[in-house]
Length: 332
Image (cartoon, rainbow, N blue to C red; front, side, top):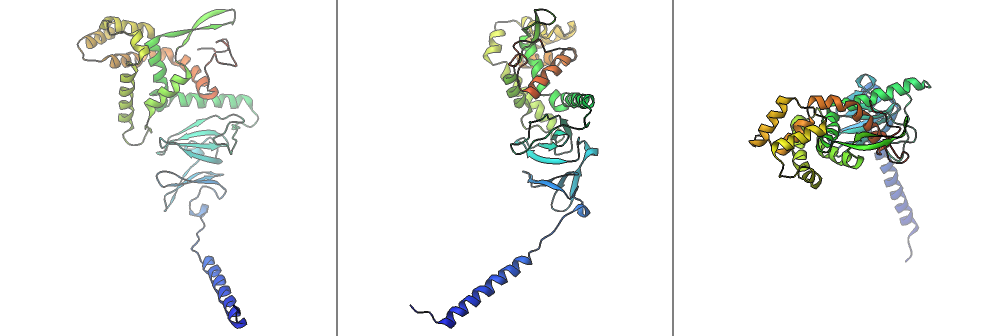
């Protein structure tokens, strides 16, 4: 086929006109720039994330900004962030958030509750970033104190007191203490927490499932979770072996109380035996009543706090490698 030169030229001209018209159309796209003048925390944006609720989150060098399509809501040092520079953002399945800042990891409740967690060198929120705690510059003592304070704040949080710390006390109430060995100052045996890391993690997650403190009817949700967990716990083979159905109500309560360190007053013990005998309380409710006793809460506090440092930071049991016993574990 032979093309007419003028027709070919016309086609080229038409194509060129279409191409340049498309460029002109693209240049007229309704772009909008948002800056601090519009409410953004800082013009230096490190990451942008859209959460499951439809909000846009901007990790900036001057705080965290949430955009709802109309206005920005900012979270900075005054709201609890350990450092204004926010590098990364992650939403969990439970709907809460983790932030990576220059001052450490932050557990961020969507309704505004912020809990900081120290992060050490080579730890990261994702495989693409590294974040190091340095809120005190080169002052090692200051950094150590802040790490301790952050750990204490997390341990004392409403969420952890009702999940992880409760799990530790339930195991103690059910099974008492384990026996560990130490070589300091000389070889000896000592009572240690019986709960192990794998048990602690799975059971804590079970009680905390779907709970976001401050959001919705979270108190009822955590109460429902506690009831479901303890009802399932007393049906486990290990528990049934330690507490066979042939035990009387008095034997059952006395064994729980003994394991917990005899924390019940005589009147509390007698009432619990009566409630169990008359079916006013179930075995699961009796277990929980002892585990939530205020005396046990106080008695176990220091030891559980130290244990959580192993579970939370080192992600291992105290006598796992690099340690072979409990020599380096100092309970308060």
